[in-house]
Length: 230
Image 1 (cartoon, helix red, strand yellow):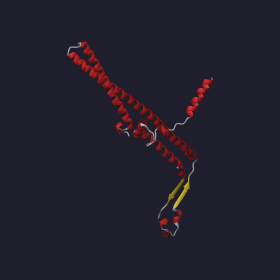
Image 2: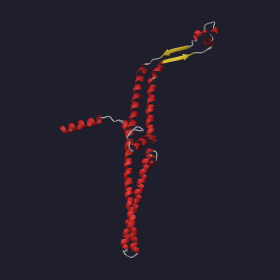
Image 3: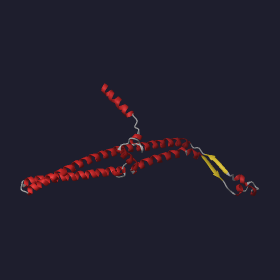
Image 4: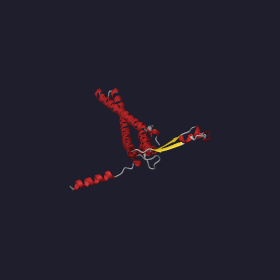
């Protein structure tokens, strides 16, 4: 029972911690940002999907500002321009009294008294929803970019190892081929060497392809070549 209570206490403490989304995507020019963090910054800045989420926040904020001034619909102003108003001297019969320069009226409905506050609350919630989507996108971008970077690093190391193995095996196979031509070894020994050389060469080609594809995937996220990242 004590263990269960301790687990629930720890879980509630962890869940209660607020995430600093300014640290999920570090601001441009942040001190101490390593290469991986720069890739995350570039992915957030350059990928069009992220701009779409940010613009949704702007739209939600505009809707909130729009609903905040709906109270102005209560008051109506009407201007009336005619010959009597513009030139009172031509109005000996005082007909301008029936056509005043302006009219001001106010209309208040019970529905407006309830709808306007509710619209404001609704639009505030939409702003929060849009901002939450931005925060979720930040988490997704960071996760995807760092995973892609890890994949790129791993594929690069595998490619280098396979390239060295292929180079060493090529040297060994050439010696075996010379020995076969001079009659020092049997065809079976040469065939075994050729099979090993072919397999390692294919593995090296596969590793090269995987490395290049991992690089392309990462570059697609950041919107530029890795060589151009500073």
